[in-house]
Image 1: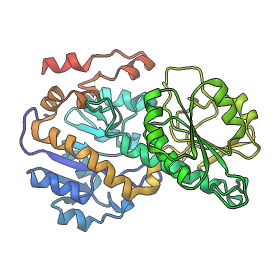
Image 2: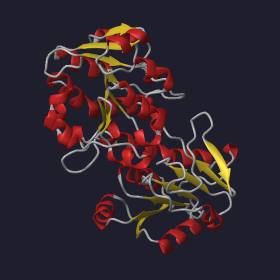
Image 3: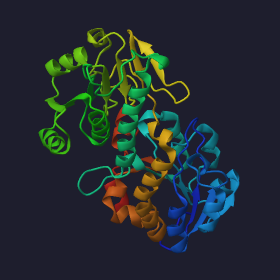
Image 4: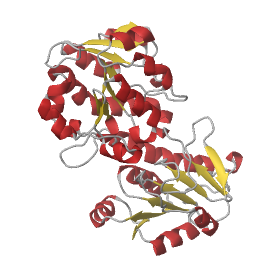
Amino acid sequence: MMKKGGGKMIISVIKEIKPYENRVAATPTTVGELVRRGHEVLVERGAGLGSHFTDGEYEAAGAKIVAKEEAWNKGELIYKVKEIFPEEYQYINDKKIIFTYIHSNAHLDQTQYLLASGCTSIAYEDVIASDGTFPLLAPMSELAGKGGFLAALHFSQSVHGGQGVLLNNVSGVESPVVTIIGAGVSGMGAAELAAAFGNRVQILEVNSKIIENARNRLPYNVELLYSNRANLERCLKNSDVIINCILWDKTRKDHLIYREDLKLMKSGALIVDVACDDNGAIETCRSTSHADPIYVEEGITHYAVDNIPSAFAKTASVTLSNATLAYVIEIAQKGVERALKENAGLRRGLTTYKGQLTLLETAEKYGIEFINPNELVETF
């Protein structure tokens, strides 16, 4: 049974199997912090190689290197990066605590299996801090935004099928225009690089406080615009690159940029959808991979890789493990039920518990019965 109180917990760091996913949930430094607190850490053989962490480094930090089956079967807390894939379903049962990016509203089959297994699953992306921010999403969002601009820099090159525009301020040449939709963490990451390269940057945002914050942080070659239809159309017409950094409610049927809107854009322009919501803010968006990152719709190249941070795996793994460590320690030290009861922000990330769905937006999207996690923890 899962531990209800404190004491030693067996934590397993799993090797990711998603194609071109090179991140790892825990670095050797993270492992050392967990071992120092008396917990047993199992690291699946080769789990850190994509981020250039060797098995020897994990062993030196106090971990035990094990095969896949042992990591999954013995681990009480499964420490991952990406969602659970069908090949991994066999290892999930009611004794497991799953802590990873789950994205349950995008993966119905996974959600159904998590419910059927009776496991406790907690999604990084839904854990919330006291100030309303998302501390386990923010580190990857910044990397995704910056990586999105670097992708635009790459695919704007003629040799990669682009229009041959260098996204940089070059003497004697009109500066390229980069429009960023949303001034959140990922939008600011994209804007910082785009502006530093000397582009003319336009940001569309609806929140006046966020606009003011961005104004104080960004240089004068960034124009901050209230996001309305008139400004959007102007940006579509004059931009060399559009970078979308806003998440779209998956229950919505409308879009921000429709297929018809692509006809307003310059020939050869590029759309980078950092958010990667299929058929979401951008109607023509569909998720792609690092192996096949771009496609063309209505003459406009789209880049919509759904795990951009994996391209910067070592940086991403360090920042992600730094962010998640405190929560892993809390779960391991207190036991998952006490941790959920005492930490409302962690509780916000609870997705499933003993066959019950505790994430409202997933319940609403698929018509699955929902139990409020705040009410649930009162039964612990």
